[in-house]
Amino acid sequence: MAHLDMTSSTTVNLLDLDADGLTAYCGSLGEKPFRAKQLQRWIHQYGAEEISTA
Image 1 (cartoon, rainbow, N blue to C red):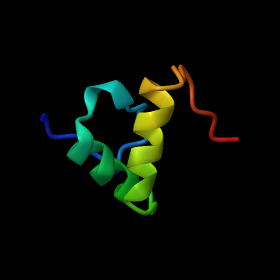
Image 2 (cartoon, helix red, strand yellow):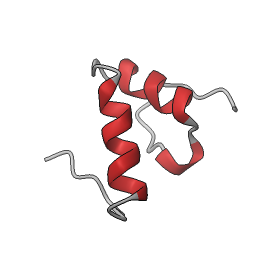
Image 3 (cartoon, helix red, strand yellow):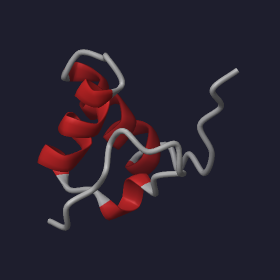
């Protein structure tokens, strides 16, 4: 997995992250690790194309 700057304000393409990377990304946002599994499910099972932050 490529190193990602999790403190940057740039957009992160979640499809570029493996399971560990997605867990680390969620942690960098102050979220619990189970959020990574939720994101994976939304992306791959439900076909989510955009995640709103509003």
